[in-house]
Length: 179
Image (tube, rainbow, N blue to C red; front, side, top):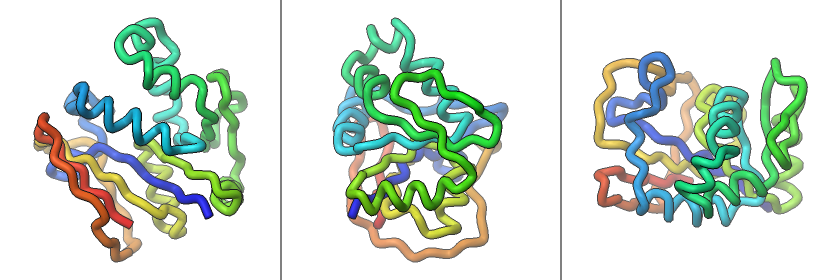
């Protein structure tokens, strides 16, 4: 059986986006890139909501990305990707499939086929997956910053998790991984 892992960066005060969608507060350095590369290698599929997909496609498909981080750019461009969107009618990024309104059943089918899926960011999508108990593993990277505003995770679904990994990055980021 495959699994769905949600990878999200959070501020200490629980925001995954700053005001007006600002992500400049993310601490990403060589150590984080090494972690991200290993993480992506273990996934069979990358899952995105529309906004995260558009953000990732706009960056990883560029010469800048290929120059700055060729190993991750190669994975991001070559690995199969799934996108959940109510508004997109086509996906132009190589190896990308749009999933329709029955996306939760599609995700379960991929998991039942031993596919490991990593959901990157995509807070709104993650909340619906949490509500329907589809996420198997949570990778929360807390950045040592207090934003004071933006988008926070908020839902009424309660689920008890077990800590499976804790890692401190030199940047001050802390990974808490739960199952």
